Length: 256
Image 1 (spheres, rainbow, N blue to C red):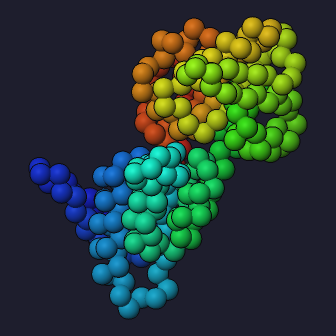
Image 2 (tube, rainbow, N blue to C red):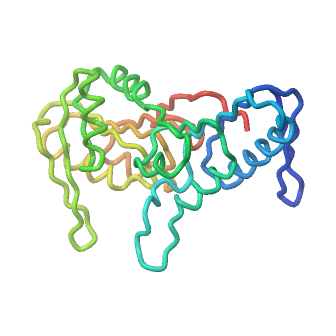
Image 3 (tube, one colour):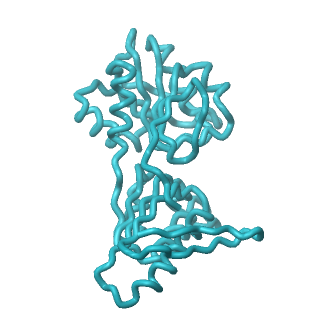
């Protein structure tokens, strides 16, 4: 099937179905505009398929907006992932696939959803570096990193982080002396936590420290990260990055 998106000068987004058929929408999904454009596409497609019960509509989201807000953190605050998920559910897609969601809450809240694994991207980074030790940055990431380590037959070192007077206190539970390390996580906003973890790894003798994140925001640039991290690997799920410090793996083309 084929469709087109048009954006008016006032910001309105509208969609038009050019050639009908099964619907496959692929979006970054890192903005509310992406979601509204998707809703416009789905509404136009629904109108063209009122009598075609066999037509299938699928949505792929590569970087789900609001995924870190997977609970109501403080009294009086909005539950943002729930708001986003409810909006997606109103579109009634037959399947919604999400790349490396931050937590299982996304899959629990979004109907007909499943997870796209980030394994192939980690594997690319792992092979480019030369089979480093994998490092899970915190307890929440341990299970996912453990599963990857098993598939790669790689060594795994867990780390843990607690905050003391606002500063991160990091413990590393394994031997990294004279070893290259690859930290693996889902998302980097600013990335300062990874800077401190890399610093702790090097204090324990790590020869080099690399970072892999699927969703690479890096909203404050790379100057601080370059102090302790040797190189970053990521996908372009959130944005395209042009920097020699970063190796970016391209995901499937976005079509909305």
